[in-house]
Length: 363
Image 1 (cartoon, one colour):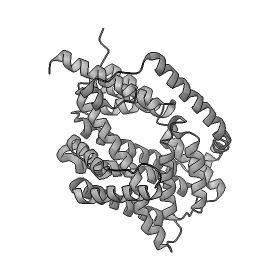
Image 2: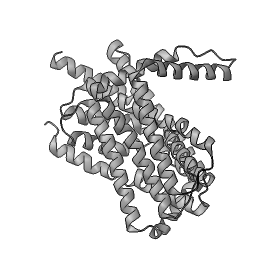
Image 3: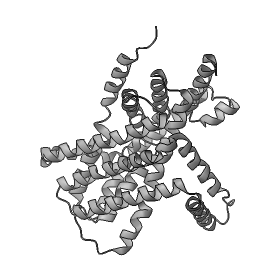
Image 4: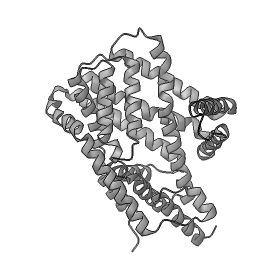
């Protein structure tokens, strides 16, 4: 492929990311992109939805942010532990992305993730803009455009699939019952579930039969629940197709990628446990795991940046159901979101400046 051809492919990929289009289809078929006017209308609609959503969740946010005065209840040790656990979470994500895009060095991967993070989490509909920025930075650092696109797509698929599998693996613990309250038990339960998550993920990536069974089961249940709608077909085949895309991206390093994915969620879960330990809570272990998983699903709601407001309200409510007192649930949620959401945002400027110094813009 000539340099001009690579440039054209890169430009089309970049526009596809910005418009939330299917990148591979754009490369293969050259689909037309939305006009600037339509793009502006779409963003205006998302801004309006965000404003309404923030208005609805504002009381919950106000109640949560008022708990900052109680942070003095956290010892320096617990605050340091939460910071270290979030750093480990980021390290796992960086390692996963480095394997996916086959980067030779760490700085471009770290800088691009840090710089794109505020756009992902801090702006309505910022996912597309954040992906475009990350793409530009990685390509500027020398990565191949097609490799960046396929790599980031595989990372998103693997990370989201992992969090979807968490509640299924926690079900046996809930059914078993009789588990004593306490953070030691919550840590043990979480560790067992995350090890099981790695094992199940490895089986699904290595063999076709389990993934076909999962697809048939989900398809059968969905069709029974929605008898009057058009039946869902071909799900097992589509799951195998997505699995093959992941394997093609990671190659022989797929086990390392899977371990990094599981580690990314385990260290994030451990951050929540550290926040609960700091407020002296004794929750129900399996329900804490489900509360954590529910918070990650709420974070995917595009109505507000990073699920802002929905995560705080949902996680606080679910922690109460897990046996955490109301005041402790609010404070633990605030501490967890402080380290997992708010504090990483200013690091975006650090990542962007470091990247520009290392790879100055031409001209």
